[in-house]
Image (cartoon, rainbow over all chains, first blue to last red; front, side, top):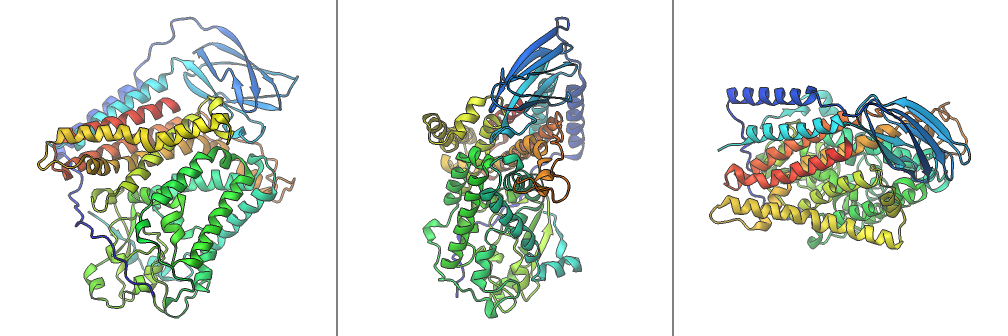
Length: 169
Length: 454
């Protein structure tokens, strides 16, 4: 029969808790952080200086990559994607833009849309094409990437708020 | 610390004491596990059409990281099918216990010098290193699952209790670490009662059930890390002294008891792997994916060396520098050894790491979840259509919207890390600025993850 374990002696657990400021200060910290976050989320970000253009981009799909893998366009551009497949049937789905085309070797496909949303959008293969199919990923970056600026600002604002909240002199 | 004892609710108590728990859940998870193995070995090699790949690495993984682990700790361990056959053979019983909770094994004792999770760290790193192949190749995935099952079975017959779960399972290692965040716990109600209870049936077993399969003495439980929530102690305690309680998130991180280097390294490994996977699997750099997939090639060896170096040296090394800075700023007397400071502060990475894994999982689980409908009807990819869903189109759920989940998750993890960092400074009797180097590390990590996702 098993003996009782010789458990290592544990120091009495300290449960002093996490320090918190007094009530008024807490309210002030939350309010200021929330205001700063709101500003980060809604503050206007300067749009691209150049006028929208019509761009035609040839994308080559192979197991398991797009070439080019990263597309950079400006917000407002009219994008025509020409998908050419080099080895198997591949799809091209663009997150956030409801674009989905497919091409097979020798038979390309094309789609035109307006890049009216800024940000980073994944390009994904929508036709099972082999083992790494779920990770056949590219990126469409529509500048300005407002989401990135706002997210980075949110990290810094939340950090500041949390540091003030949990700080105790 | 406030807790709400759930076992005060008679129905909850009745369920936990019933021997049908967790067997009733294992009766579901075990056939699913077996089907995953069978489809992996005999089904289509196309991962997206194979039940094994989709239900293990998309469905189960998503449930584990996004729901079970953050909200129920080690719930998965309670219903995991992998140790079940071995445990039933150990017990020579499925549901009702043998007299005295007797186990039929060779009863080998696990070596005391292996009473740590370094083996789990190693096994997780091994799986992680080959993960690009494991996650995408049904046959290899089935091989790995079978290896787990055989190891669990073998150790059950040789050793006492659930040695595989406690010391070898690569998944159990990080589940235990992150279970410290969970808002539920199993603890004794009154340690004095345990001290005066001579029979210690919770650990030694009785006619009502078996001694703790996890080799845990419930009275000594201070954290969730090594409690598998199997509920055996509820059945064997004759004094109604075990409670399932709800508690604040991260409660275990408020105790500095039992902080160890092996657990600290588990935190580093998980943090690093979440970052590496986000780059390799979710990024647009196909050369990385192809290199990680091409096991055995020269490029793969370079990848392997970099992967292991990042996990074991680079990231912990950077953190060590931050810990050394924190120690310099602390100026406490007598000064703590940097190694101890390093270990103590490593637990700030627990909330950050879980958040990173949740954010990483959001990037691929919803997108690929719709394949589950297809493989339900055609698990082997043989052209079946059992439920009429085999030809449902791929539907990328949350496409374009993942960042709205990922950013709040990462921010929540960062806030948790900052809270724990300041608390750790206080535990060391150091002033708040001491924690700033650690916080800087956490902020830098979060910024990198945000940059990858947005």
